[in-house]
Image 1: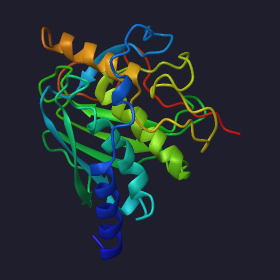
Image 2: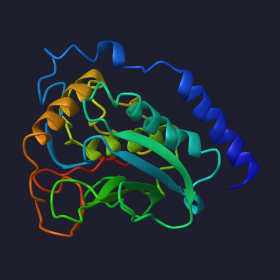
Image 3: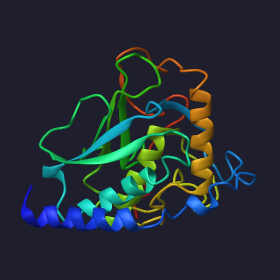
Image 4: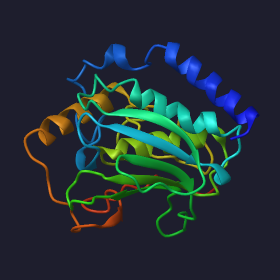
Length: 240
């Protein structure tokens, strides 16, 4: 890692450590968080409770200037580890030359996932060694067409939501959930981290996880696009 990139990351993390969580103050307001209206439903793929997830960025895919935008949603989701009841900590482990397939590892990387049929620009790929909903390792794939820095933040924030069990909510009220969609290519939706309704739904998801761990929806040892069953998880982008 170059010295310039190291300074950028250290500065960003320093700021993040001393910043108050944006959404924590309102996390207890659950009454208005109706699934399908202001909150997403929750479903299959989920990090195990009380785990530490090592987050890597594929170095060759991003510039030093883009790295802070990728890390911002990581920090915002991590800041809510107690509020969500998940106990899951997201730890930035640095850059990597190849996608990591280690237990409790997450790699942020680029891949050509955008196409006219699905109209999405990012995906979460999850792998379960045990054939259950519990994620062993995962990757967030960002299409090379996503070039706007703020949109990179929005896409990572959305896909991290999938890794905490949240499903898409494209009909939810704007800005009520990070699981809403992008309306235009490289046009930010302003969502950088979980909202109070996202936090409430993750808390419900992990409460359910405490009583029952579901089998993987497509079978054992499968690498899948999280949420393909029962609903698509893609972050849709409508080209200009």
